[in-house]
Image (cartoon, rainbow, N blue to C red; front, side):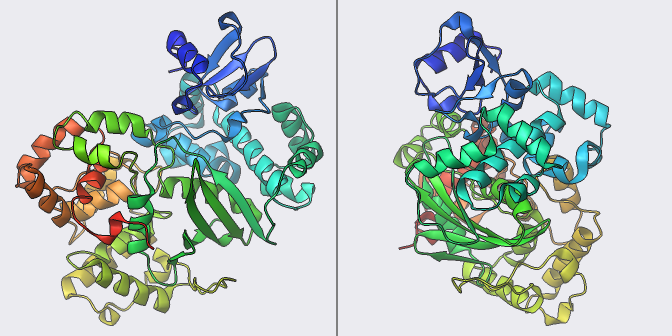
Length: 490
């Protein structure tokens, strides 16, 4: 979008927050870059130039605006709607892969050479993987500086910097303030009471956001010990590269309030990335809803509760296991099966609030599980053990960088994986916005009540008009049934 100057200018002059994260405005006279909704008086048109990423602005010598804080704007929704190499690279960079594995590790995951990835990112985003990772490190550093009491030397390494000198130089260059000055400025404003070991932050999103199906679904399907709904927040445990943690996510006007407790602060970047992915916070709800409103049968559902998101997962392998446990059983039965698996094979953790007890077991922990210990039909035992073996030995990978169609093919080849299981994994674990569940019982009931075609083939043909947002259409169709997944817990 940043190449459409006229459209960008209109967005800046109207301070349209819908375009935050789509592009950034750099002001040639002040050498400052802003988000489109910046509250200051818009600069003259001749002094504006537009970039596709904060990293590109920083690489061109611009510093972040202190008023609108463009480094904290929602991510571009493009990376959610695409599965090409650039989109997959951006999702991996957002997960901190470059910090942990370097550019060669990023390229290896994508199946390209480092030079090819560099060329593709430069062409589309105006910055290479190192610059993009540097911009993310700066944002993580700012969060730690402003929301924790960690010594600045520890902040530097927790944010992913290799040295304190690089940390100081980057923060000064990006924010035009030294790290100590950033902390002093943050301390001047009203601060919420700090809890030792807890990082509290706000996760931005594009409005509108309907929390009912999002948090209602997560709460209704929560696995005891791993997830819970408490005091208006969804809480769960997280398995992270350097340790583990817990997170509490609560819907608030204009943002999601997050409270993170981590055993290693170096996991902050990936923890934030997983929470944003879980809640689908980088979606563009206006584009989605505008498309679905064109169908006269869907339009009333969209008008009744616009801004529905797709509830996803923090771990693709975990969700695949849970999808198998949920085949042809009720939500309550699926939770019971998963809770037994967690108690038997999950790693115990301490939770100061007392409700969370375990991490969900990894595929490696489940690899040696005795099928006879599972209270499941024999065919489903085979399905689960085959899936776990494929995940544990790496022949099947389910992550944010996974190619959607390749994963569908590999899943379909496993015993016991029909269209429903494959598509629900594509929708919630892989993030495909066009995944569709025509055989789902809730979708069939909704189709019958709305006058949509009854057979899966006919419904799929009708749903072609909803593309590429059929996964969001599923969320609206599910609201036709009065099910707990559609309501925030009381």
